[in-house]
Image (cartoon, rainbow, N blue to C red):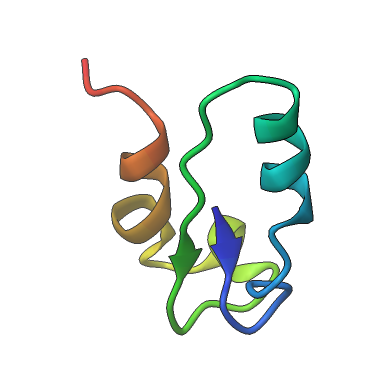
Amino acid sequence: MNAEFGRGDHDLGARLVRRGGARVDYRVVPGYGHGDVAWSATAERDVWESLLPRP
């Protein structure tokens, strides 16, 4: 997952992991900057719920 206003257009990491044979789901969080994925008041809903399994 990458931030649109950070380095959202750079999928090199995802491409390298795919090249190694793993399945990768690459997404860009619209409207977020680099640090927003951790510090935004809405990051839990917009970012982390997509990454972490629900209990």
